[in-house]
Image 1 (cartoon, rainbow, N blue to C red):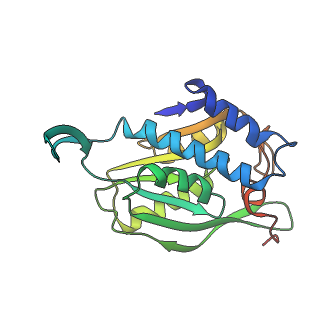
Image 2 (tube, rainbow, N blue to C red):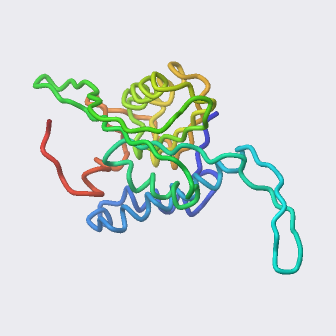
Length: 216
């Protein structure tokens, strides 16, 4: 399943528009906040499809029956760009275990790149629900490599992906490699440059959130 949240929420469309806007992008705090907000709405929407159970809650005057999550999902994010989006998810799934993955593009002189995965820290994943956040789903290579690595650590029961902007090429690649995943995105663009950047996209989410980095 693929869900374009901009089609359901005018606020998501508004926040994605601000993420794209070059006149606003210089405000790093606002950029991070908008990613966090998208993560919060994505968490709310994902919660609708997660398993619940009824629980009796004791109040000062009696008992009330409420539906509560059967389990909290594992929240995984790709460093460093995914941190604000991850925080939005964590604001709602506040009891979740967390996983962090350092996956980045290692560029070559000819303009090509490989996905380098240098660091992973994760809890037990066997038979659990996992939500992976990454602001830009471009080629999909980083996400697929991340999923394969996480599956080597344990087989999740469900995998959800949250992105601020996704490209149709990347979505198709992820779904081809991992057909069972559900993708939740703030918006979908159709074009991908030869260097693997989404058009119109928004640029480099990590740089816009935390400042420019040296090319590796």
